[in-house]
Length: 304
Image (cartoon, rainbow, N blue to C red; front, side, top):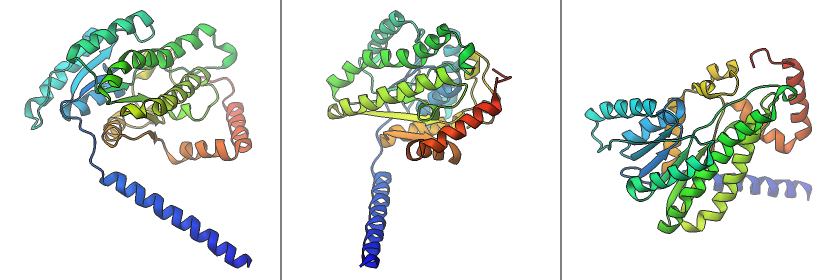
């Protein structure tokens, strides 16, 4: 009797895995979303991952609106993209630019209106801009906590909510947010950054459920460390882990693929961070112990 029940359970598990694999295969065979001619807004587009996203979406034929805080640096990106498209077989468009600071609510509202006026609508919004922070909670001023939250959380959701009505009216659109693996697990000495990314994950998970009926897709992309100059925009100097991170070119290609497949949640991290996400949910006591040991080992970070 017990052997029969065991065999039956195994059959159910194997059958479930088979259905899951088949479902994933069908997703891969499904025609991708069209990027050619789509109006794509990218924040933080003057450098790093945002600049690489601009490259891949421009090469795919998107009509770009590049956003950032420096008009000069944005113009440099436009010039690079324009020069690179000379030999392209795909029809490309000269990107437009929009200069504003996500941390300033009034600037975001005005920028959203100007973005809408560029082409009359927005098809894809990529919330990429952000700042980093690493430091001991005891030494972190509340002004720093607010600054990180303003740029990483309140800024992106303000721009999203300003552009969302346009997508609702056209009953189509795609909103992408570049979060972090630290939006799924909390690591010592990253309190402000991890908190902003946890809030981001929660907000866009809620948004996905609420706007699906309007034909709007929402994608949260959670990379591990990415080799960008995000530290130049950081409240403090970023730790050395960034130098060992993923190539932003590879992350940008993954973002483009996620848009084409209308993926909901994409984790771009190594096996250990990915495993940590599951351990945090399935065996929290172990996760807390490991993080406690890590905090003791680092103690007061020397490179913060």
